[in-house]
Image (cartoon, rainbow, N blue to C red):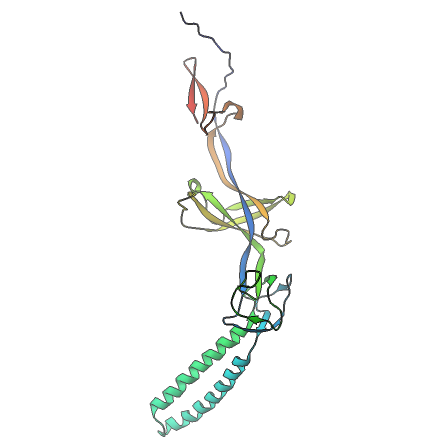
Length: 276
């Protein structure tokens, strides 16, 4: 007759309760906007008006390129404008052909467009308010368009650091729950006693088939400028409450050598294994 050894165990009732569903991710703080400012064509850098660390306002001058071609085009435009004014009078009295007038007007329009292009691309201004984080040339150097020793094919780099943004990769199972405007809490190791608030403002529409996750971008106000681009951060997103069974962690066992977890449930006085 087989002897069955009885092992005394403790049992407890399991009930459903409401718990907060919060997910957390690690991420890197990024500038909300970043732009590497460069002219549209090679030339000599006449003057750079900013240094690394300078705060600039939208529309503020950043640097000036050589304007020899710009000034020559302006003189040509002024002469064409005079010629076109004279031809306006002549065509009214029928002294010249319409074809000649049209050719002159087309030449004027092309030159005018070229002058506007050169004006915009030789004196570059800040497209938004921010801080200069990189300067790669000095006054008088030749900009060729090739990457410099720093690896940047730009004259200066401008970043917006208030607000900042954080991009997180979220598991696809949370796709129906993540919405624009949801709040997020951010912590940084360098400020162990502080929490920063953010909100999701952009959700990328596709799932990465390799990681089975999607990207969400979080805007983080940074008026005190404590957070800086490149910092390590932890992001906590609260997805509301969910009703679930709650157990002490020590009753959930792990199958050795696997990631399988299970508990024992009482059925007719016998402990039955259940995968969880």
